[in-house]
Image 1 (spheres, chains in turn blue, green):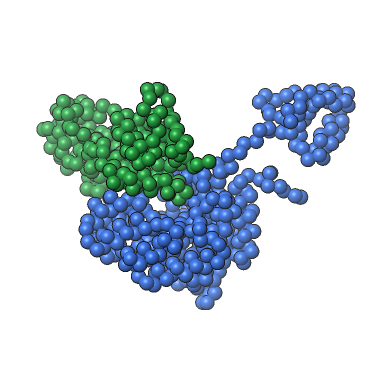
Image 2: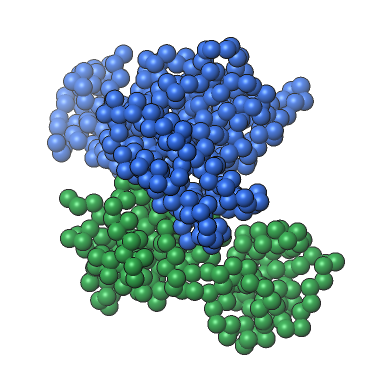
Length: 368
Length: 207
């Protein structure tokens, strides 16, 4: 059966396209159950985007949860083999408290994870796939890349206690220069924080400024090499380096990124390297991955159809079913959508109205 | 067609002051000064669209992307923690978030402190950072009368000059945080309209 783009909702089209894209790069689909033992989330509570988890007691008395997250389950079940990388993608529903409504929502999420001996190539491949995922969603997109190693170096130099550290990181995430100044005061380390907050933009603009801001050569080289790999595909104009992409350093390290498309008010893609989370879960391997939040794409296509149906057939109550079926089949064979009713439904918008009586077809209205 | 920059302004005196700052930055829209009940004003040649919204709603408009940027009080940002960029402290609309109580009030740490406020999250965070057990009484207005009627021991509210407090025999006991108006931006809009937004921020910095 042919399915045209017309029949698909935006998020469905993207979901199919992304799965095809990830398979092409050798990522295997990872299918999982909707439930997971609650214990897994308690141990890694801060990793979850929202606090709430829907729980229930299984028949054997174990406390289970409807998955609020996919990554933790993948890590739990991954096997480690030196020198190799496991590449997986998933398309799952997760259940979380939505930030704005403060109630549980089912969120369709597509994403991928790369677990194992992560090297520069793996990271650049994941970034490339993140960029391509955004291209699938919209022509106007931006991939914001940050390096938590750089941020960490600067924050450590400030010698702050944990609470103050968290507040400074929050300021970096908000591009909040005035508050950062209030917290950090003067001095070389404070200047470096301010430099990080005000440094963002295209790779070409940012890299030289990072040198001036005293960022370590190794980190600059890492960022430069990664973005150069993406440059090969002509993607650099949509890439930005921006340190306001901050994730919990308890779990994430190295490269982190967020993707935005024009018309959606929040990031639709989010990911990064999470070696620290792997360590916390007793794994030696490194890992990087990202997720695309498909539920956010619902509002993206604003074009609304003018008509609900192409043709509305009104038939007499005495009309034999066979005659109605024939008329409907004839119209639907032309490729038009058709609905047969005994009377005109309220508020139905149709292009053409046809009456069928005694096998005779009369056109009553034609709005085409 | 020029991409329009959508700006949510807080209704009232502060909003008018803020508009003047935007106009100076090159985003003029003279029709906004005309007497009318209209809420949306547009100047296509300058590429800007302003709308007046309730001050406490500005952050919602910006977070949800209906406005690209807006001006909101730090009190609202602290209370609702919207996921937005806080780009600039305008240094206007200055006041402070404070704990006030009748002048004869003595805090008794043996008892749960009853706190009346519009800003439940701010009050909760403040007292939990001090390890104080409190009972929050969320009110939507006339907070000052809560301690007088014995509804609460103290109030957490915005204090500008202190006149209202004084008239109700209350005085400030602690300042929680200073407040002023902040320029905020939607994170996604910032990616696609950073040129226009930066122009405004830089021009405000020079004012």
